[in-house]
Amino acid sequence: MQELQVQLTCFQSTNQSPEGEAPQFIRLEVPLHIKPTESISKLCLQSMVELPEILFQEERDSYDLTTKLKFLSVLAQLNNKAVLTKALCHITEVVSGPLVTSLEQRKATNVKRCDELIKEKQMLIALQSRS
Image 1 (cartoon, rainbow, N blue to C red):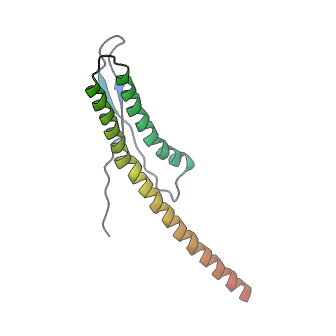
Image 2: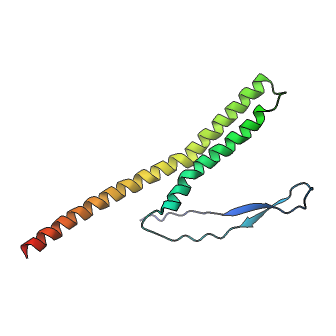
Image 3: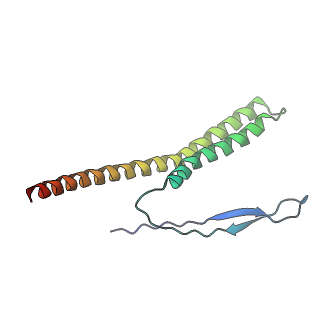
C-alpha cells in the first residue's frame, strides 16, 4: 500500500505597525490538530462549501474596485475582466473541482457501505427467523 503524504501550514497574517503607519504584516502560526472521523460534520461540510464562495467573492470585490477607476482605458478594463475570469477558473480548478470529486467519492463509498449493511441486516433477519 502506498503511503500518502500531505504537508499543511496554517497561519494568519497580522499587522504589527502602529495606527497611521504603513502596514507591516507578520505571519502567526496557527496550530492544527487532525482528528480522524468516520463522517463529515455538518459544520465542516458547510465550511468546505463556503470556501470557494468566499474566494470568489474576494476576487469579485477586487475586480469591482477596478470598475470605479474612471481613467482606465477599454483595453485595461478588458484586461481586468480577463484577470477576474482567470482567477475564478483557477479557484474552480484547484478548490471546487477537487472538492466535488472528493465528495462524489465519499458518496460512492457511503452508498456501497449502506448496501453492504442492508445485505447484512437481511442476512441477520433471515438467521433470526430460522431460530
